[in-house]
Length: 115
Length: 111
Image (cartoon, rainbow over the protein chains, first blue to last red):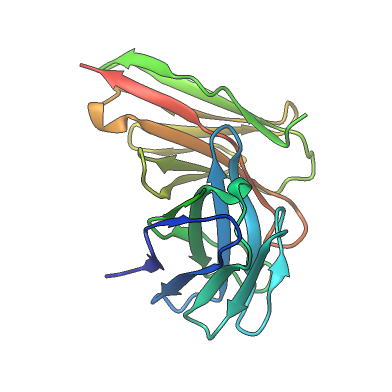
């Protein structure tokens, strides 16, 4: 009963290094999302994928890229990490389709520190 | 003004108490409303949706006031296990990706 699985759970990077956060869901959901959570800021949408083959920018996309590899997998890449990207990253999925919003199911989070 | 505003708390209440949280939203065209619960260092999970007529799930009651643009969550007979951060979530009327999270209200239930 995995749901949404994110890896890695913890990562420490140096400024300028790159890395990819992986996310997979086994609920056959159409939509997948990447959020970041910072103290006092709430969850903010970085990118989302409404369906397989499509991706769109969210509220804070700068410094990130995404790939919807297939219906199950949605990865987030930091090309050149900056200290401002230190955060907790959550992947989520939902059965949203046709504009109808479904419940968001979140992964356990990935804690990233950029030194 | 933030799109979704919540009192960050913490609300420290004794077991068995009733506690209420409010959340205000700025966009009058907002369509759907939810309460999520987030335990410390865990992921958010849906607690309940909020319907125009109000809805109840056991000890939890959610209400929507469109005229004043706020939603509320009432927890009766608080349990220690209710200690968590409660996130107000608002969906705009266009597209289904525009979902805004509040910063959350922290509840600590004390024995």
